[in-house]
Each structure stands twice: as C-alpha cells, then as structure tokens.
Length: 388
Ligand code: SAH
Picture 1 (cartoon, rainbow, N blue to C red):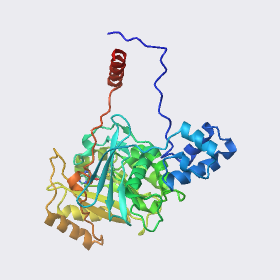
Picture 2 (picture 1 turned 135 degrees about the vertical axis):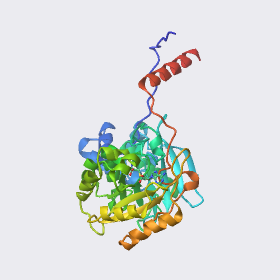
Picture 3 (picture 1 turned 30 degrees about the vertical axis):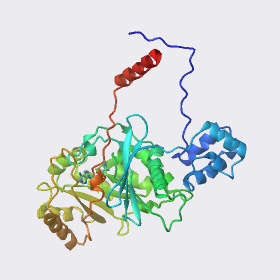
Picture 4 (picture 1 turned 180 degrees about the vertical axis):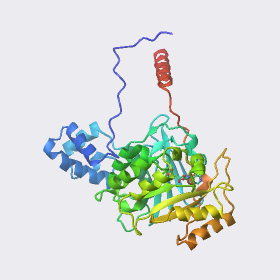
C-alpha cells in the first residue's frame, strides 16, 4: 500500500469558525480577528451579542445596526450555525428530545420538558458519554467520548429555542424558563465549560435565564461543589441514591473516591444555602435495592441541617438493565416518611419515557475512536479519493 500526496492540491478548506454559542470575550476576540479596531471590538461584540442571543439570527445580513461593510466581512469570515439535529422526537406527554450532532461520532441528547419549573425545563448534556459508570444509568454504559465546549452546551439551548419559537420572548411568556444540567455526562468534570455556558445563558441582554432557574446536578465530585456555587450561583442537585457508603459505592462508584462524609462536608460549604435556596437530592427508586422504610428514615437523618428538597425518581428502565422500578406502593410509603419529616411532594413524575428521554435514559451511539483508528480512517479516505 503506498500513498502519494498530491502537493499541488490545496488543503481541504476548513469550515469558517462559528460564532453562535461563544461568550462575550470570545466574540470580542473574533471581532479583532476580523479586523475591527481593538478599542471598538467590545462595542461591536455587544451589538452582535444582542442579535445572536436576543433575536437568535443566523445571518449577519440581518444585523441592521452593524455597518454593511462589516456585515459583509463577518459573513465571509464566520458563520452563525446551529449544530445538526440528527433526530428529534416528541413524547405523548409533550416532552421533546433532540439528538444533536457536533461532528463525526460526537452526538449528545437534550430534552425539553414542558410544565416543569416556571414553565418548562431544558435538560442539557455536558459531555458526550460519561466516565462514571453508575450501574442504573443508561448513559453510564457509554464511555466518555469528550467534554462539550461551552458553545456546544449553549447551542443546545439555541436549538430548543429555535423549535419553541422563542426568538425573542419577553421574560413573562416563555416556554423555556429553567435549565437543568441533568443530561449526559458529569458537569463537574467539565466545570470551566459549564461555568462559561451558564454565563452566556444567564446574560440579561441575551437568553436571560435567571441563575435561580439553573440547576447543576452532580454524582458527587466533592472538591468541585463549593466552586460550582461560587462561580455560577446556580442551584445544586446531588444524585444521592443511597444512604450508606456500601450501597452507594456500588450504585454510584464515584463514592469510592468521595464518600458520603466528604460529600456532605462539601455540600455544607455550598454558598448561600437557605430555605429559599435548597439543595435537591435525587434518589432513584430501585426495587429491592434502596427502597426500604429504614432507608427513608436514614435519608431524613442524613439531610438534617442541610436546606434540602428531595426528588424520588421512579427508576426509568432501559434496554439491558438489571434493575426494576420499585412498586408504586413502596414509593408512596417511602415518600410518606419524607412527607412526615417536612419534605413536600417528593415524587418526580417520569416524563418522556416512551422516547427514552426520561432521567438516566439518554445515550448516543458515539464512541471515542483511538488515534490509530482515526488515522486509518483518514488514510483510507485519502486512498479512496486518490482512486476516485
Ligand atoms: N452526572 C450527573 C448528571 C446526570 S443527572 C449526576 O449524576 O448528577 C441524571 C440524573 O438521573 C441523576 O440523578 C441520575 O442518577 C438519574 N438517573 C440515572 N439513571 C436513571 C434511571 N435509569 N432512572 C431514573 N433516574 C436515573
């Protein structure tokens, strides 16, 4: 096998950089690279910001307050593109799921759930795949492919707002009011990008979703928990699922690294916790595994002194799982113990189960390729091109 390189051929044109999803600083730098004077770059970036994040435009020509010549330069240099929507599904209950393609072998899902939060919540992914291997979670069966960039996370919100027709909307009559980082991946293993994405999503001159309506869920990366609060002001959710270390080690293996004591020490350091800003504890109901009344009482004891809400999540089955959802009476009896301890309506109604959009059911087919596989693929493509 020999490969000849044709040096007379120009390298394949690379796609122009995408500005949609970028933060303010990213936009400012883009303006400078397009030739805008440095002292005007911030002002230009601010103009673009409004068009991109308030009006949702995907065409520079529509930016009527930007000089025509600059619009032309921007149009030649950059794009304002959404990622590809590889599949879109709607559940009988109105839940919508998008499979978003960020490039070859890099797909992540995000889910819009109406009538949750103030009006509706978008559940976003922070990684393609996951490193955590929680035994009851479908995403946990998919190896980590990579972290999503801040722009890629923001673009999930942009895609949802496109479909919901929310460019622009007043804050009063929106369909998308809340964001939960409860899709694929562990947000605290991608904290810098999550922080930047939240800054963009909450910016008052753009998408303008309040930080109070953003919740980041973690399986328990203890050392990053206080930092998350300090850098984002978002709400904290903890995927607890067990009340003792032995069981939690099995269900949520990151517990072997940061046990319940370390986890709760970190949670207590989360800034500004109060009755109006509580930690959400997620507890998946697994038949015969973690659903006894004794565990309900342990849960109450464990949360003592932490301003908390509890979400009991009926286990959502997925192909190949060994777990079953607890019986409804068991869930109700468990909830009753929590109710008596002062936790109101703790059972979360499953949404979007028919399209595998419910908690823990998200997964994409993307797999990480080894460098050697990528190289082999590239060489094969070159050969095919040379032959063809
Ligand atoms: N890695 C983060 C973000 C994912 S959030 C975290 O673990 O918090 C997804 C939530 O759904 C988590 O609480 C997770 O434990 C829960 N979950 C996972 N699989 C589930 C399933 N099959 N049924 C119900 N909930 C599930």
